[in-house]
Length: 241
Image 1 (tube, one colour):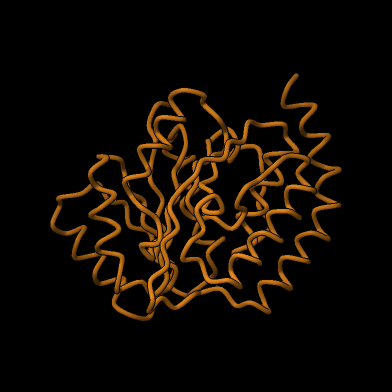
Image 2 (cartoon, helix red, strand yellow; image 1 turned 120 degrees about the vertical axis):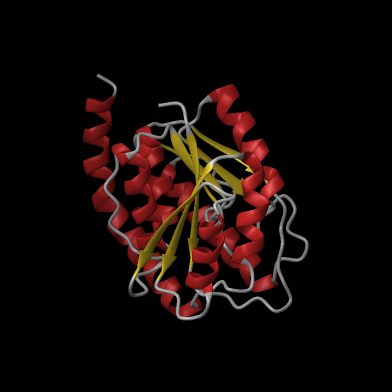
């Protein structure tokens, strides 16, 4: 396995998806775009871009919205089936700089980690105050559970190796999936790296995050993680035999 893919989960991103795909295309990596049941023009825009044949797009679609975690898992399944080395995930809302993909590729080549998380917390100017406080709290909590420093657990800009994907069973379907991946990677003793990325928030951005519902899901994740951890610890022993 030598190839790296890009994975772009999208839900109602007609405003930004075209720009994100074009900006990512400069790396000549396979782009797996998963439309999670969008009800705006996202599907049509992706299909039009793909039909032009200019970019290496694999388009996967959910008929109904299932949640970001489910969209990620659809992409992960394809990554494993096609035997990629790993996948770089980037959000479809243009809140990540595609130019910074190069930083991920350089670190993969240098250190071959299993998980790289792009952290906005070293440069959080422009991040809404409530989002900053939420990110700091969740990052502190997940770091405590993981037993190591995780700078920005809410970041969707990250690299995940196929070795990690093959050795975890994801139980969540929404934004909590990203925290679940971190915890299970840490408990397996796999190499996790943090790198700084830019913070971008558009004035007219509409967040898909529901503060109350996602807070409830986060605390459920923390509760369930105590059970998962015991199982993962046994799996870790077998992984490194």
